[in-house]
Length: 229
Image 1 (cartoon, one colour):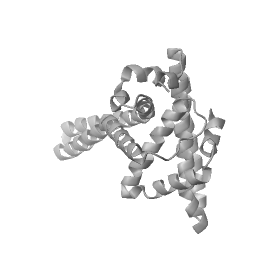
Image 2: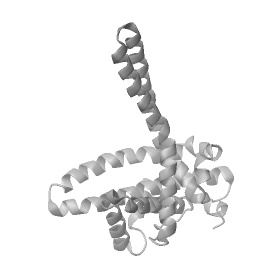
Image 3: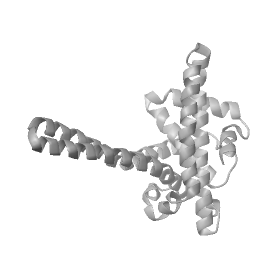
Image 4: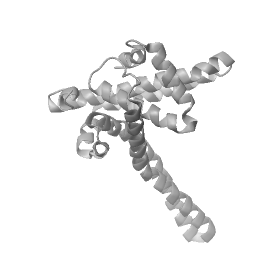
C-alpha cells in the first residue's frame, strides 16, 4: 500500500497539470474558496481509491467539488467539536481554580488537567475517525454517510486502516524536513506547495484504499460495485 500510495499522485496522464492545479489551490487556501475546492478534490481521491482506481481523479465538475469540500468541512467541524469542547472546559476550569484558590481551586485544577488529557485523546480519535468518515461520504455521496458509525466501525477496527493512519505520521515528519530544506532557497520555496499536495494525495489514497479493502472483505463485493459504478 505504501509504495502504491507514493506512486499514485504521479500516475496517469496530465500529471504536471494536476500537480500544478492542486499546488495552486493549496497555496491560495488562505483565500478560503480554494481550500474548499482542494478539500473537495481530496474527498474525490478517497472515493476513487476506495473504488480501486489506480489513477487520481481529474480536476473537473468544480461546482460539485466545491459542495463536497463544504460537506467535508462540516463533517470535520462536527467531529472536532468534542476535543474543542474539552479544551474550552479545560480553560474555564483552570481559570476558575486559579480564582478560587485553596483546596477547591486545587480540585478544579486537577479536573482541568484531566480534561486536558481527555482533549488529547479525543483529538487523536477524531484524527483517526475523520478520514474514514470522509471516505464513506465520498462513496455514498451523502453527508449523512459520514456519521454512519455502524459502517465506520468495520473500518476503524481493522489493521489495514490502522496502518494507513500510522503511515501519514511518518510522511508528515519527512515532509516537514523536506519543507525546511526547500524554503532555504527561493526556488525551493516555490516547490513547497507541490510537495505538500503530492503528500496529501498519497495519504488520502492510502486511507481510501484501506477503506475499500476492508469494506470489500466485509461485504464480499467491491466498493465500486456497492456504489453502483
